[in-house]
Image (cartoon, rainbow, N blue to C red):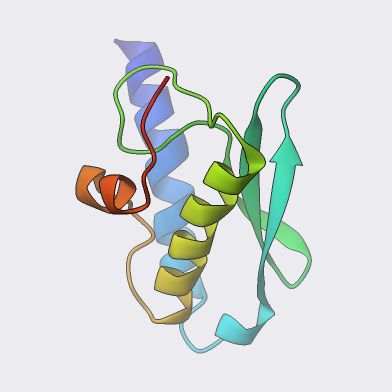
Amino acid sequence: MIKRFHRLVMFTVPPAALFFSCQGKKEGLRLAPVHTGSSWGYRILHNGRPVIYQAEIPAVAGHHPFSSKEEAMRVGSLVLHKLRHGQSPAVSLRELDSLHIRPR
C-alpha cells in the first residue's frame, strides 16, 4: 500500500508542479528519449533540467514498459504538447489508444 502511494506521489506531484511552474515558460521545454536497458522511456526537460521521467506506459495499471523508442516518443510528444498549451500532462487510456500504444 505504501509503495503504491509513493508511486502515485512520484508520478503525480512532479508533473503537477511542472504544470504550474511552467505557465508562461513553455519555450524551455524539450523532449528526449531514454534507453532503460531492455526498453525505452522519455524525459521532458525544462531549460536543460529533467522534470518528467517516464519509463513505463502511463495510465495503465501494473509495470508495462514501452516496447520501442517510437512508442515512448509518441507519448512524450503528447505530454510535451499538453504542457506547451497549459494543460495537465496526465495521459488517459483513450489517448494511449489513439496513439496505438498497448501494453505488452
